[in-house]
Length: 533
Ligand code: NG1
Ligand code: ZN
Image 1 (cartoon, rainbow, N blue to C red):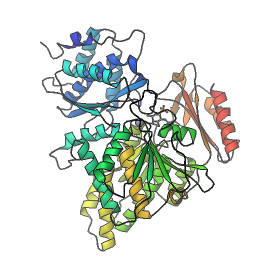
Image 2: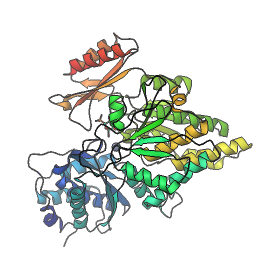
Image 3: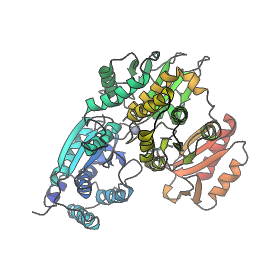
Image 4: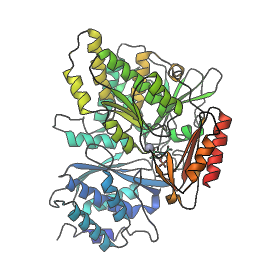
């Protein structure tokens, strides 16, 4: 029997729905969960092949649709260091998902194996997990069939957050190497990040309670387990929106995406001035903070605010550590609030660049910096220390106790962050640690700069593929002349900025606008949306 000998028989159990086209986009495959069975089966095949193409390194598969509706589901592949799937393989995913017959599935596999020169005698190793969605178990079974068809050595991590799966993959592939990342278990995850957090806050004043909105998703049980492991007054939390059992609750009127999009608190949280709140999204890879000011008004601390808080703290530590040429930089997308970008450039005097939407683009830009902080405004991001930063830290020879302390804190910070991907739980510990070290309330954090009024609109069009962009997606090259119209509208408003791009995850075009006043901002947003429609 050839390597693909069992594929046709297994594939026949998971027929592709007729008249459906699947596409591996920014967030992998994502659509109505019930339509994804054939796709999951085929992703299992491809994950196995990807592992063989990497000489048997472990590949991850995460079944989730993040902040999207509970009826949706999705799947994405995780590469050996816990990073997103290499871009050149995305088209293979799309190709195999759209193969019309079982024989065609084998043809696609054969052609990839030839093109990539894959040694099919290698045993594939794949780990996988899912979030709390009701369609998850069925899709997982289809995935397992795909893995079985290629005799993969496959392990389920059950129901965990997306960043936990990324962490496990990185741990498994770095075990017994000088860059070993940690224990590839849930307990290992809590231990690594929890202990780094405690090392940073040891001896400081204890914080007030943090109320966490877990979007009725997988973040709820996971953050509780972290609290049970830590048992520390420094991690004093109360989890709300933690019902993962009742159907229809996931992400409804709660979660980071709801809070960021609606600029209001989630259901189940009434804000008391002085108290502290944060929201995860459905698979716990995004986080935003918020509070009520003394007038009771809602104040959001989004991904931009987290990036500036973290960048400020790192900049100060690096300066105290007194290490030559160790630079902190910030990567944002065009959705970053204009005042956050000005604050990074003009006040913090740190380099900042814009990347295209989607964390893999930010991640790649951040890898180019010594210490790269990257966050999307929606709360997805992390920090990367590149090899040059690591060796500068290793070779540093502190001359004073303050320098030694700053270097130790930089190491602890590095242990505290999930370097493979943005992670709501590790980002929360990071923010908490910085606030505890600075002795800051959320209002003190918020005081650094004021957001410009902004508005994000979704416009449903007949064909979003005609919208093409350049310049980190801020300038339209198609349809012809539309960018000129946007420019003339923007020119009417002080501090006006607006751009139009097709969504990579939804069948819609997004319009972003900001301006000096709320009225101007809304007029600009709606007039640009009108021009798009
Ligand atoms: P699209 O649908 O391409 O705008 C959205 C988010 C991204 C990213 C991806 C992946 C906005 C404006 N867009 O992408 O930032 O998080 O989903 O989940 O928030
Ligand atoms: Zn998510």
